[in-house]
Amino acid sequence: MNKKMNLNTVKAIALVTVVFCMAVAGYLFREHRTFKETVVVSDYCTEVKKLSDYSTAIKPGSVNDCNVYIYDSGVEGGTFLLLGGSHPEEPVGPMAADLIAENLKVTQGRVFIITRANKSASTITRVGEAYPRFFNLDTNWGTKTWRFGQRHAAELDSWPDPEVYIHYPSGQNLANVDIRNINRNWPGKEDGLISERTAFAIMELIRNEGVDYTLDMHEAELEYSVENTMVAHEKGHDVASIVTMTLTAETFDVPISMEFSPKALRGLSHRDIGDHSDATSFLIEVAEPMLDRIRGITDEKLLMEGKDIFVIKAGEHGLLYAPIDENGWPIEKRVARHVATTTKLIETYSMMHPDQAIAIEGIPTYNQLLESLAPYYRDPNTVDSSLIYFD
Amino acid sequence: MLVLINGFITLCTYAIALFFLVCIVRSFFKTKNVQDALVYSIMLIPFVLRMLRLK
Image (cartoon, rainbow over the protein chains, first blue to last red):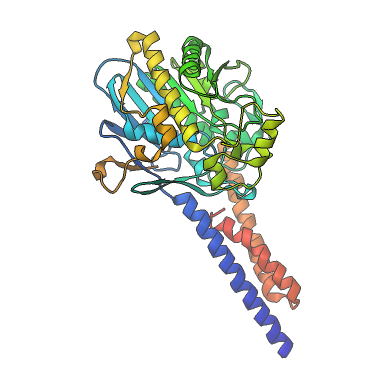
């Protein structure tokens, strides 16, 4: 009798403990997946559409039905699409896209901004690698928070992966997990899995809106050779070379290089957006030490400060593709580089293609952003609610 | 076609997860061994989280 009571007591305690653990874990997973990022658009944002407005490949209200922020000057000119959040473990993409969306004024032409190109991938993170769920920026009005994600759409939205991912339409065989990586899915597939559908819907936006050029913002580990660079489709080699030379000469302390988009590697935005539309496609990378395999403690501090003793040590031995010193690669510098490159790209493209010119105002300079990012994110509590969107 | 197959496999996965969940819960209540009961209770976690579409 006593033994049976002991057994039942242990079972009850075990069950309560397990239910408690499940409740905590479940709450944390759900909080991350359902968290809404606030974007306070600038006063000059003329319209906000949903991606599903451009294609039935994305179901209205579904996880990847992201916002498309439109800045239309009403003056004839070019059309530019800025993509952030293709890889949500590279936070500068959405941070720079948000910052531009919150400050932009277009006086000629049109600018389209997507801050979360693969939203599903931002609703799950790599807990096994100790990735944080969120990252925060302190401002004088409070804390602005973003979801930290991973390269691939969540398994809850796209599962199982095929044995081999066959890229459409090239037929190239790619790693199976890359079927959930939007930057291996371009130009997308209307009846494919979620990342393929998302890429297809964005391609429809590009084709239907007559987008002239696109920029996809990324970050990369310092151990990776495609680093601090602009990768350009052959239609944009002239523009990219001038953008990178000018920024290197006049603005950046660490040079930005320029690379040709390889024709043999499929699914990347700089290759397949350009091949399957009239748009010229560009992609930029900046150094993010948190992505390096040799990093030490992985936390939000490393993500924001970009400082890691092991990565710095590897740099001292010349083992990396980007320089790093005791100052690291802080978030201010990374965001500033992407914002400055975007501004310079618009300026240079307009200069070389006057019939597709775009004129913009309101974007802070590289040096202003190096000082602090905080003043350039708007306080959602003091603006008209019609300017507030969630992604 | 791939989408259809994926949908079918996903459904099967949930059915299998539910089957194992029921088996584990049953074994948990039937066992008279304390160590087994603890193991069964821990084994429950991923199946419950999957069924609730939390992870």
